[in-house]
Length: 274
View: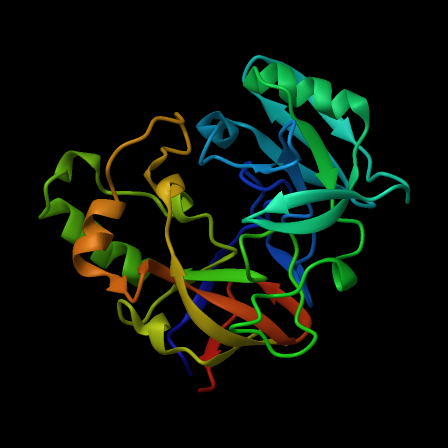
C-alpha cells in the first residue's frame, strides 16, 4: 500500500478568488468539476488576477449547482450569479492568447467593480471541450483546459511544503514563515512521501481517475500574497529562487492532465504508476 493519500481537495470556481474544499469531486477532461470556469476581465478584455488585484484573495466563490456560483467578500452583500445562457462570445486575453467566453449578468460586473474599485466584468467559459487547448509544447492531441493558468490540475504535497518552510526559516525572511498551502492554490494536496518526490511523477492514479504528470509548476507573485489579509511579502519566491529553480521556473507543485476520468475523494490513496 502507498503511504500517499489525498489530504485535501480544492475547487476555485472564479480564477484568483478563494474557493471551496469538497470531500469529493468529479474529474473532467479540463480539470476538477467547476474549477476556474469563471474569470474577471478589465476594460481591455484582459483577464484580471491577484497579480494585479491581491484583494481578490479575500473574496470567496462557491458552486451552487447548474454552473451557478455564490460570491462573498468583505463589506459586500452576497452575490448569486447564474451561468449565462448561450449567447454572443466575448474574446478575452489570458497570458497573451485569446479565449472565447460568455459575459455574465451586469449585476456581477457592478458587484466586482465596486469591490475592486476598478471597472471589471465577470465572464464564464461555457464549453471547455472546445474553447482552450493545453499548451501545445506539453499537450497531447485533444487535451483541453479551463481558465486555469495553463493545465487542468495542480497537485502539491505537504512534505514539500514542510521542506520549503524549513528553507524559509533558514533564509533572509524567516519571519514570513511558515507558509500555509493556500499560498499555492492547488487542486489536490497529498500527505505522506518524501519532499519533492512529485517532481518525478509521470503518471498517477487517485480514486477512479488517472493523471499524466506534465511538468513542474512555475510560481508567480501570487504566492507572496497572504490569502487571509491580501498583504504581500517576499516569500516563497526568494527561497524558491535559491533552492527550486528548474529551468526558467521557480518550482512548487506539479501540473497534471487527466487521462482517465472518475471521482477523487479526501482520503484516497495516491498511486504512482510511473
